[in-house]
Image 1 (cartoon, helix red, strand yellow):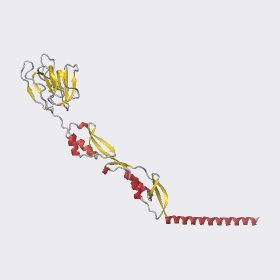
Image 2 (cartoon, rainbow, N blue to C red; image 1 turned 180 degrees about the vertical axis):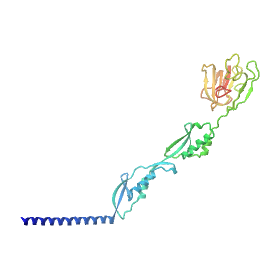
Image 3 (tube, rainbow, N blue to C red; image 1 turned 30 degrees about the vertical axis):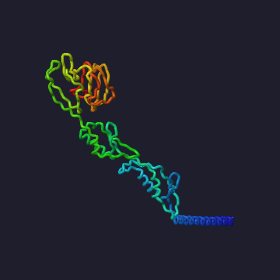
Image 4 (cartoon, one colour; image 1 turned 135 degrees about the horizontal axis):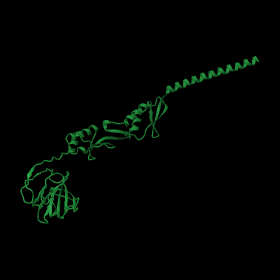
Length: 324
């Protein structure tokens, strides 16, 4: 019994020694293998773009960071971002030491077909884009200068941030302000006295308005009632100028403009024409016997637009002394 146990122990000891030797050999082999790998290979990353291997890099993080910087905002060139067609993928591998990495070629291939998107600012007037500038600071400066100059359109000026594949042509601040500025219409008033006559009040004072345009008389005749006059016939201030002329006398446009109305609205004026001269100025020719123009038609100063009827009035709807 004792001999049997000794034989078993001997066999276990022999097996253990063999196992230890095997483990030692495996460990030494692993060390040798790693040494050979380190001697002949470098751990690196294989870079693939659209399923095609385009190169190798030893520093994946640095290469990808460089690509990210390229696609991000570039304020100096007004680029909001760049869009690349495909993103590279990376796979760890062992590369022979005699094979070189090619980060520059990889970077070039990834970025070569990129599309830049530009950022700029549109200056708008009444919501219509007029000029383009490079920075928000320039746009803000234009708005502030127009406010300082008390431009008539300052409330209509706006700033619109824009993005696009094409960069617009920029205009400098000074030119934008010069082109956008609109001088406010200044109303200058003077007074004069109406000569005495039996059919209108004498000695009345009237305000004379500078409308910014030159008007001519629509007909030659006798003024039988001026703007604002009041007589026994009328219980309120007169809203036009009555000019007496023979029936059928041609009526001429006091200034060039666009016909906005031609007809009879049954509002007490009979047949009448309204002409818009821009900047809010209109002239009205009422109590006509015949109308010779249509709405939408453009007329020149002095062009015949109608013929005199039983009473003809001319007044302006913008400001005194013409009716608002």
